[in-house]
Image (cartoon, rainbow, N blue to C red; front, side):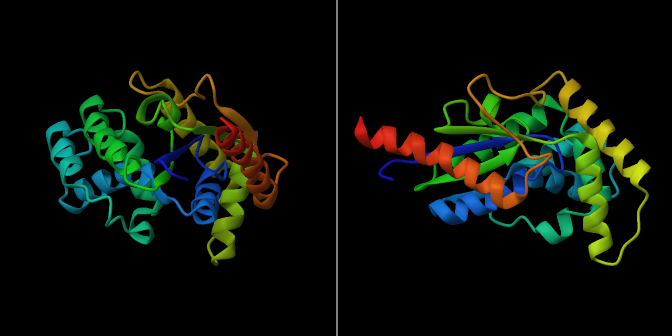
Length: 216
């Protein structure tokens, strides 16, 4: 790849886009950014300083201080942080600050795989490849339950499903940068698809674009 190459992956929580993004970044030797972690970092900063999540000024300050090279997935993956993140993510000013950081990341050679909710529509509308990864809410809830149980935890399927539906509504219904597929995105529904099949399907799409580019 002779120029900065960008792969944008969008979709709802639990659809498998994070795992797919990691596989693709590794395969194509591109930088990787889970943009959701940037919003989680803002929420985590507010929680750490015992600041209310509706303190927009504090959220803006936290957003400016987010270091994309130092996002601790283990800490930021906590459920409470995710819930808080989807609340601070509705603030347009916070989104603008983080989007600029995300765009700068995408411009860094050799390119990047970014996954999130508005990569193909807002952050990188000129991305070389846009994927929209989705799955039914029930399938995503079952995956989340299996994930929790695999590490010895317990959870209620009905509660997980309700949480996923709430988050989808919040992400899709917000006025600023709602979750939706870009007009030119390739749709990958992983409801009946294992990660390996999703990876191979995505790779076929990307390789086709690269092959056409090489011929041009």
